[in-house]
Every structure is written in C-alpha cells, then in structure tokens.
Image (cartoon, rainbow, N blue to C red; front, top):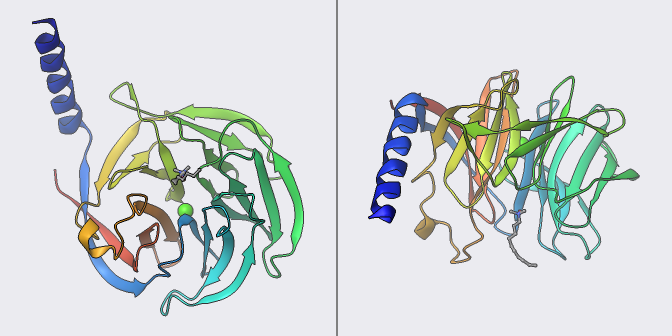
Amino acid sequence: MKILASLALAAVSVTSAQAAIPVYGFFVKATYPHDTQAFTQGLFFRDGQLYESTGQKGHSSLRKVDLKSGKVLQKKDLADEYFGEGATAVGDTIVNITWQSNVGFLFDAKTFALKGRFNYKGEGWGLASDAKHVYMSDGTNEIRILDPKTLDEQRRIRVTAEGKPITQLNELEIVDGQIFANVWGTDVIARIDPETGNVVGWIDCTNLLPPDQRGTTNPDAVLNGIAYEPKQHRLYVTGKLWPKLFEIELVPVQ
Ligand code: DDQ
Ligand code: CA
C-alpha cells in the first residue's frame, strides 16, 4: 500500500514535469560519417573547425576532424593511463579533461603540443566554454564554472528539473546562452538555464540513431557529443562509436 502510494505520487510529479518543461524533437538536416573508433567524449567548433576528444584507456585522443568526410586531420593521443573526457577551446588553447585521473591537459590549438596541465577534485566528464567561463560536468547534477584563465573553480550550478536533481550530466555545449547537456546513458539532452540551473527544455533524440543502427552491440555506444557552430547557427550531435554525426534542427513537440 505504501509502495503503491509513493509510486502514484512519483507518477503524478513526472506527468506534471513533462507538462511544464517543453520537449523538443529533431529534424535531421544533414548526415556525415563519424569514426567508429571514436569513443566521443567532447565535440566542439573553434573558428568554424570541428574538434573531438575521445575516451577509453589506450584510445584517448584529441582530434581535428573534417566535418564532411569524417576524416581525422590531426590527432594527439593521451597516454594509455588516461581515460579522456570532455574538451573545449579557450583562446589558443584546447582544454581536455580525464575521467578519474583528476587531471586536465592544455594543448596548443594549432600544433596540439602539450602546454600545461591542471588538477581538479572528483571526476571529469563534459567540458564547454563561452567568452566568459569554462563549464565542467562531473557525473553529478552539478556543473562547475571555471575561470578560463586559471581553470580554478568559481562556483557550481545545481541542475534540477521541477526541483529534482538531474544527475549523470555528460557532454556539454553552450548554445545561445543555454547549457546543453547529454544525460549519460539516455537519448536525452537537457537545456539548462545557467543562472538558475533549471532544466528549461528536453531534447528527445530517440530514433536519431536507433541502437540496431549503431553498428555495435557495445552498451557504451550512447548518444554523446554536442557541437554548435554559432556563425551558421548549426547544431551537431553524435554518439560514442557511432558511424554517423548529424546536423539537427530542434522541433517543439509539446
Ligand atoms: N563517462 O564517460 C560516462 C564518464 C564514463 C563512461 C565509461 C564507460 C565505459 C566504462 C569502462 C570501464 C573501464 C574501467
Ligand atoms: Ca560540446
């Protein structure tokens, strides 16, 4: 009886959350090849050029990628001991964090030469930046705001939807002042107000690339990787080990 009552309560609040937070679907504008060896952990543009960071120990790298062909134009491997995670550009530097090694690397954006490193507590998941800040997720519902010059933590955003924490926030992107975050292990991207941490929209990417079209039975081949090209207002998404990368347009469904 007690269990039934709490289930009923949960059902009610889920229903009201869905009613209140707008849901977006997608329209595929273009489809590009994606390296099926790339365990995508970071995806971003710098000066109109696409970059990607990849994970898995022994396969972690930073790449400059040709969007149209999916070809890797330039690559820097991380040492085998590191499980690469998110990456983003800050001026002439590309910052690339690691999952559980508490270290991030600073690479020269042109040569990919290692320029420095920095440390942080907790796990490293996603990374993104705008003109003022670097944003870092760590697998919880918190997004850290880092000083772009020192990479010191300034504060944290606590992400909630209708008051409930949304954890497992992974790859990040800043899109017209909002934070977009993949929710790890799901086909969902949260649109987050950076001031309040409120989820102000859900992007449902179900059927963008159904599991039986991912070319792998690896359960880790999940949606991950959001990149926005602000000059042309183009939004791109892919997944870990996926054979395709998509340009999508968001379509309101509710
Ligand atoms: N993360 O990217 C969501 C932070 C981690 C994904 C890890 C999935 C593969 C786990 C392999 C475990 C080997 C220690
Ligand atoms: Ca990104």
